[in-house]
Image 1 (cartoon, rainbow, N blue to C red):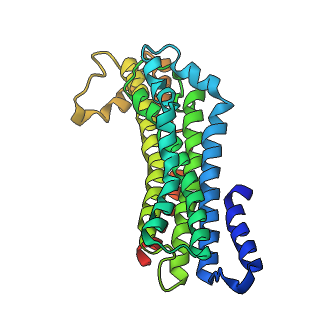
Image 2 (tube, rainbow, N blue to C red):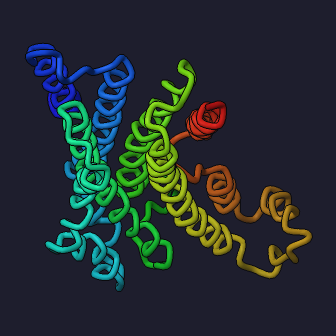
Image 3 (spheres, rainbow, N blue to C red):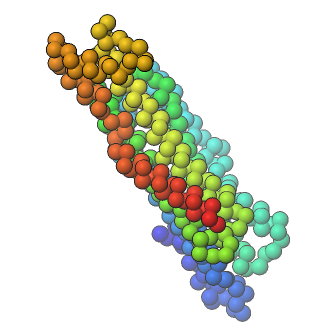
Length: 301
């Protein structure tokens, strides 16, 4: 809360005590500080979950990729991300508001206070965005590997898959809330609070939400689905069960009707009904509805 709303509260406190009322903060300025604080809090919440949640469960991720021949390649994006120049470039986003201020040449106390708060938010947006973009690249590389150590009877609940999926799912919720918060002031006012900057801020938060909450989850979904299908093909891998794609649905009846291998039939049914992600589709629908709601709110402005 201090890191999120502190700079805005300091600006308001100084403006109240300023001699002659030189700051002249308007109600829209106060809403701007509140909005930036909310966005800061959402980004910090997403970052905290994205970092601390897997950190306590690193062993599960290591178990998932330990036997893979591409283990070093999978973790390489994160290792490269720790380079000084790579990690410092997003932090440079904090300079953008000051550059805009210098180009405008209006250096009154109010504009300096707003610029400082924007720079503080850009510092978080740049840094947190970078570390929310880089680690999910591992899921893209894992999708290309066929030698991951997945739980044979329920791959979606492999501890490593759960760590990646749930950790980024929680982060995506905070990002979606941040994107939705950006749209709220414009719904109750005559013009967007950040003017021409609003589409860029909203686009960044929306893009991060889709990257972390949708695309990364889709990569994990394809990993577990491929494993399930390979196991099902292995169980049904004889002449009696080899069907054309058009008649693929008949394989369920053929396996169920088999009296010679009840254990195979039971295993096949188990694989066919196993989930593809650690959580139910209801949460995915709710998340999609929240994203859609934020888009509608943004367009209504």
